[in-house]
Length: 68
Image (cartoon, rainbow, N blue to C red; front, side):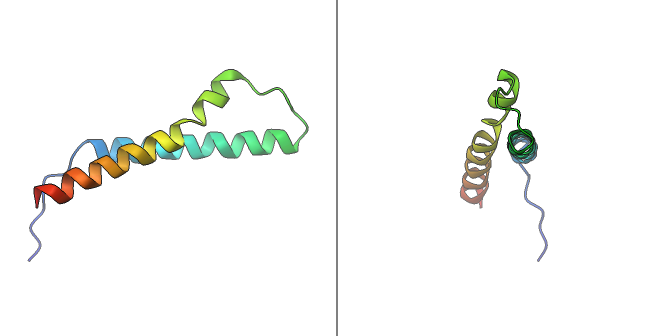
């Protein structure tokens, strides 16, 4: 009953990307709460990794469900 399907390398990549993006969003909120209004550009760009990781995760899950 437990046949292991081949997992796409896209799913761990999406989890990592989403996690880094969430950490960047958290860091942005903490820095803003501490009074820093001018955030570095790289931190603002890193915040975009959260929706990108979620998009990759949805694509990976759709690909995996279609293989079955």
